[in-house]
Image 1: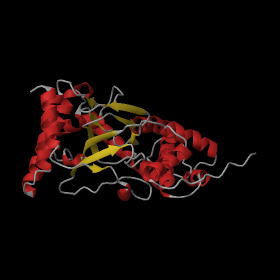
Image 2 (image 1 turned 180 degrees about the vertical axis):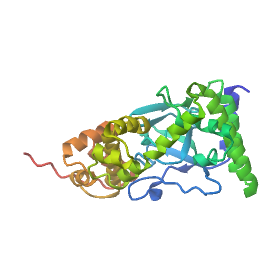
Image 3 (image 1 turned 135 degrees about the horizontal axis):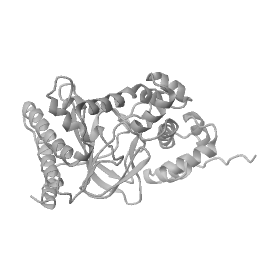
Image 4 (image 1 turned 90 degrees about the vertical axis):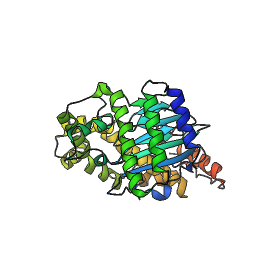
Length: 336
């Protein structure tokens, strides 16, 4: 089967189900992290989201679970670390889950998306057959420093679309719980097999893979500290002590795992929190800047615009206009 035919079958399968608006604000914790609860005995979840410029939850996040992201209808701009990936319908993205990531809004943004989330131990853990680590290689090995995207039209995409079609039909098909779980795992493994084979340029020996996996997990205390205390200063020396590394080794390893420097990562978390406060509260921009950890509002305005493409004031006005909320007048800055 050629890629276009396989893609058509996947789209036909997706017409059977409704796609919910990407409105996950109620599922965010106090720090804005989207922490999906996955069942211990079946840590797999597939979500059918509908993203639009008018309605989707903004803000960058990171998480322990692994994720695949597939737009069905329109283009998507997906930010991971310091890089923005442009996706067209049918482009299957392997999300670098520990890097701060989010979709980027733009005029006319409107597409359905399949998001497949699972915990790595669902596929490979201690005691698993040795070869099973191969299924996770696309998530932990980006030696060429480029995101892993299986593009529509790539010869390998046909088999991936067939596996994805089987996966969603099994997951949402209404079979008994036993067969949903068994079948979903089979088809997920099939999908991951095709991705691993496609990105074989990043293939590693088992011990090298495990070292990269352990290094990613090692930084979890730092990520969680930043998520819970993002408004506080965090010197490199303090962060390095959390993971028992020298400052130099920490700086190099953190950028490899997170895709940006510690300062850049901290600022991104602060800006995501600020975006939530701009939408959900009536506090002034100056008050929000101070609350999330920016002592200089002008610097906050510049960083916010660089990250989200608009000033905080513009962001708030656009959100209020789309939600039908009466516009608030922002107090003028005092002249020095």
